[in-house]
Image (tube, one colour):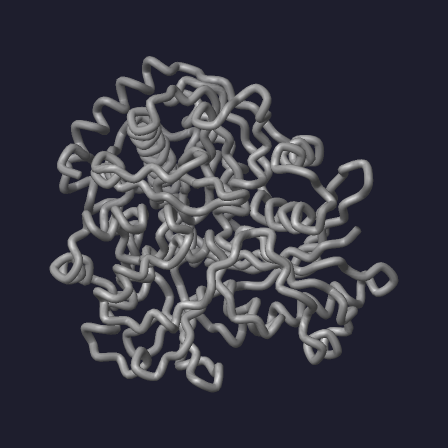
Length: 498
């Protein structure tokens, strides 16, 4: 049985065929990759949505040609969170779609809280306070009297918009909707009290559906254009990529119960959390700025958004200008050879959000703390990896306090799980086993969640057994934990103002 998973990330997209057999073996075929990027126009930052859809269609066409004798059961899409499309009364897109790193949300949070206190927003939505959230983007439009809102008849989160283009159905999936900070995870519906206080029309928000919903067949004209069987289903996995990745965490659910294991979805962002059976919304969760996203099978992904490999990705862009042959292996090698515990800084400082020069921002932040700033590729990259590990330790401590459990094992999934040095740093500091893999967690979760919806898999427990069976997973055991903890104490002194 073949299932197509479309995995759209902030820097690239992939169209992947999952081949799933009766022996519960899963094989991935990455049929097509393409670059994804933001476009700057007149001080604004947008997604090239037409480019993305064109690439999706190309990828589906290649799938159709490559598997012409076999066909496909279903297609499912995952994307990043928070970004959205507005449609007019004719269901046409209203203008370009803003990128979450667009500066239109700078300084907007404080103004939003004057309209609706953050305590009220959090009690209704359970989502951490971040300027990228959909609610903040929309409030910036309200403050700037955007004419788009007055003519909007439908709001669709980004994967829901692509599902609409493929199926003709206008619905919003719960995991993606929950990233908006306009969704109530207790009621499992839109947070209409918040929506009305913003002065928005509640009617523009479509019906919420759960992961595992089958929207129906692909549109006939799309099927004809790409050469695919018109009976191919459009199937909904957890549409937010983080939650599809969490579904694919290869945890042994017989050995580790809910709240005893944690996951780290490592990529441009680091999403660190636990899977719970119910949302956890209280004053301390707000204080520590944790989030409650809706997961598969009505679970809650209780997690913290951390600035992840974004810093090193931005640095590499600058290094690539001087050395186009620089590889990630080179960077890890240089970092490992550099002196340890030299620089301490807070990765979630707003100055790292989207600076014109990431290397300069890191060096300036170190100078502010009276530290000798890092100079070389090795020094800069080691500083980033060490401070990521410190931040993981800090968030794990907060997480354990909130859930009242000790975390016994950490699963690192996603592309960042390939960073052996960072994985080892994390194990050293957390002083628990760290299991890394699979790297393609989002695609695996996407495809297997579709298989679950189609009745090919019986449970999330079986799904995760398949992931363990089908994936390469590497274990990291702690080393020199006492030395690392002393460095962590120094880190806490430096970042105490945050």
